[in-house]
Amino acid sequence: MSAIPALQPRLTWRSAARHAAGLLVPRRSDYAELPRSWRRDLIAGVTVGIVALPLALGFGVASGVGAAAGLVTAIVAGFVAAVFGGSHLQVSGPTGAMTVVLVPVVARYGPEAVFALSILAGLLVVVMGLVGMGRLVSVIPWPVVEGFTLGIGVIIFLQQVPLALDVPKPDGENAALVAVSTLRVADWSVATVPLMLTVGAIVLMLVLARIRRSLPGSLIAVAAVTVVAEVADLPVARIGELPASLPSPTFPAWDNEAIAALFPAALAIAALAALESLLSARVADGMVEEVPNTQADRELVGQGLANIASGIFGGMPATGAIARTAVNVRAGARTRVASASHAVVLVAVVLLATPVVALIPTAALAGVLIVTAVRMIDLGTARSILRSTRSDGLVFVVTVAVTIVFDLVVAVEAGVAVAAFLALRAMSRVSGLRREGVPELDAAEEDALLHEHIAVYRFHGALFFGGTKQFLDELTSVKHVHVIILALTDVRMMDASGANALTEIVTSLQRRGITVLLKGLDARQLRVAGAVGVLAAIGELHYFHDISAAVAHARNHVRHELNGRSQLDCATLPAR
Image (tube, rainbow, N blue to C red; front, side):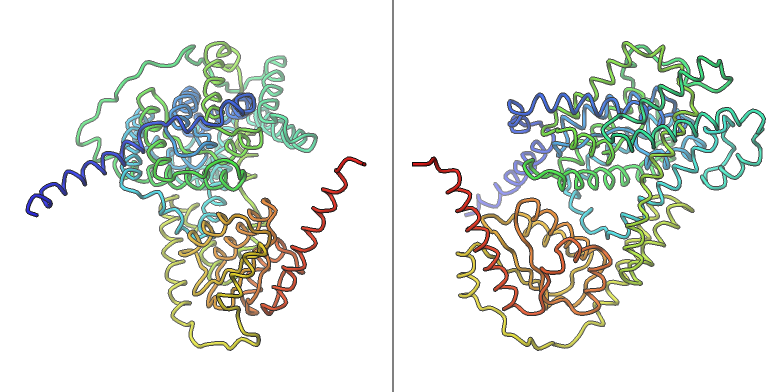
């Protein structure tokens, strides 16, 4: 007996080592679908590479590190994250949110500090993955995520003002103040020409999007503006010379003093890289049913390694990019080969087309990023949140304001803190019981319904930002069911995040051919559900006030569905 405790630490260390190895080492299962999907994956990789090129150049220029650093980041970080990350669909690279954080760092410490910062932040993200922090993103309220995104869009827009006017960026870290200063000092007799190029790129992108969304509007707009600038010999700033090959790997020189100075910024970048990457991966998971969901901790490890590699090769910090990931999924990607091949496409650009890329006016990139920023500002979602509850509206407004005035990480912290305080206050006020007019189903009746391919789920307690993830995961994994009845009579509180989770559940189940019926919300919860879009997702005919009506409708629906299948089968039988 005495030998057993002595063996326990070894077993613990071995299990920890196996866990770390599982997060750090790629797996053969990552490519199980490749024999069936490689053509679609390669086409998706080329498509994303075309979309990523102007964005990588633009974010590099906008951050102050340079176009070459943005391109290196898209190549190196994009490839490493694809191989080691936890998502089969995620595309990583430089993003607008990261640019927002880097601008004040470059202003304070210079562009060279960014490479060391990328490595230091990458190490922190790897540690976050190894200790299992990947699930923390699920407790971030929906209004915080949307407020954070809208605030980033506003800042990216403001950051493009110096580029659009070909004016050297004035000193300062706040994007709004820098934009105002730029307008004051601009020589409009000179600034009009680059401004017209920026407007031309914007208009062309918007027109192409209306003609056909699958067209690479940003690349076409940049190419067209470059041709105009060259043919007319316009006096505008260009990207300039780029390296004709990838730079050699080097470790930046740093000491304890430099690490101490950069650590707060590295912590902010690590938090942002984790948050944006996991949110992007979650969006990708919701777009495709047949691809395995993201492994959150492994995704953090992959993003951390991508940032380390990017810094070693002279790049900037990277995260999962929502827009490029969405393009990847829509283009047909099903394995990580698609996102890896997008990096290979960008390598081909470096090797073959750098003289042409060097001619691109920076004003054209400003136009691309302005359109990107505007597309991040979803006014419909903002209206839904503001109409849901006062608490959610307050959380949203606070997050937007703090994002614009201070920085992104402080905004998330402030938004979560306000949401937590308001949620706890609301939960403390919930009390009392409500008697049902119609008795609820007992266990035997529910088992009988399961044989009819009908499942009934009750939810008890508060459906708010801190408790929706488990609810979402359980419901979206259900199988062999035609109709799901969600009995929400015992929900004592529901905020916008809970209502948004319900919308995601309904949408995901309906994509799989499962009908969702809703029952039991009170008047206030119905108003929140209507504002966020739950009722629009299920349809008015699929909301019920009592369980008997819901069960009867479910049985009728299954009966019609089975009869329809039988008639279809009979119609396909050969005539005798």
